[in-house]
Length: 169
Image 1 (cartoon, rainbow, N blue to C red):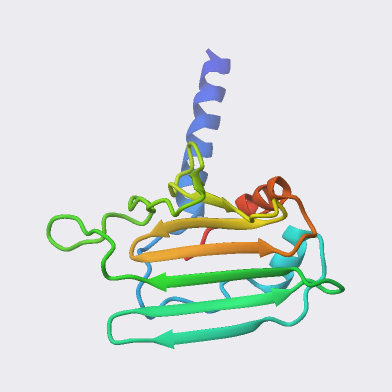
Image 2 (image 1 turned 60 degrees about the vertical axis):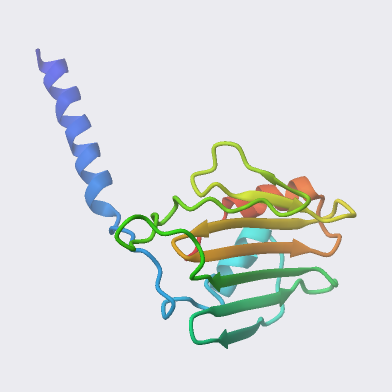
């Protein structure tokens, strides 16, 4: 009897911690996009490489926004980049609400392949030379591209690293 009670209490405690420790994720807005959504140190840690200071861009249009950030890997011509595009044409659910933070499928681009079981329905587009690529996914009305190009890693290694980064927005 004690064992059953201990297991039940442990399971309840774990469930409560899991449901209260993380804040609820809200849908991104056109104003909430950041040109450089990853901290410099966060990217360096993920890549296990040093980066030059990033360059950012923020283009605003009446109903669209395109933001991005690019870092050069020190001592190489390789680049890590993020581009996020607010696209009002991404499908909405009845009543005008976004289909969901992770529910909108990203149409596959030529040369891209779907990543099976990905919660964001992401796709991977390998560089032509097989030495990098792009992770592409959609959340709400934001299409995100996280890229690693430049011949310092194989495409498979670049994909593994980019899939380990947290998802933005």
